[in-house]
Length: 329
Image (cartoon, rainbow, N blue to C red):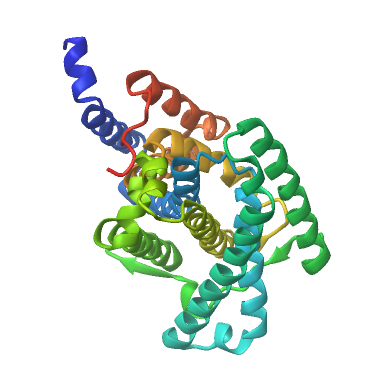
């Protein structure tokens, strides 16, 4: 195959190679184990997508490297933790409607609280360092430390067990295949958020302005739109998406702790690089690649679980340096 064909069809070839790669574990495990790992991998990918999509918007549109993104993930988890404890009767109710109601309340609370945190961060910290990646890294790292210490002050320094709505627990037995309930709900949540973001970006005037801002922020400003107000809104949305991801992952892992966002911040950076800056579709595809790779390799060769995603990122960058999807695609 010539070099020109590889360059012209690099995205399709990479995705096809990934699909083939993810079928290989079938050779070394039974179908039940494979399906269990696949569902867990897709669910993990969807939760990473929630974090990475916000980072992709912030990095792709605003050219801001936000090291505090991971602690926003933890804030979302802790806000949900407080909501679940406050509405403990709804959490323990043997009613799917009551459980979904308290889950939606937790999502709304996490989005509002962490969105406000994002607005404060953008106005107080980020706005002063636009255009300087070095200062962005330093100041957002400082913001991360402050927000993490606030978690320890408000909720305490110890690990906590995350309450789980009763109907989110357990599993379904389908043709002798055990499928956990919550990963399915997490997958549906991720898909719903992806659809909403895509509709806003592609079907609304605001979305068109945001997409134009990814390509040429100076032109958007020249057309009379307040680019700084848009930056504030995008930053708030990005941090709110991280909060939803933290909430979802806390239920999945059944725990919350102040440093929980650190590992997923690394995954989010990998996903953003794989998918391409500013691309929500790229974030989704990249997150699924990362989630599936991590789960398969963690089962087959546990020490290589994290390293395999770094290797995949390097290979993709060698084939397509801008990532699988261009911004706005």
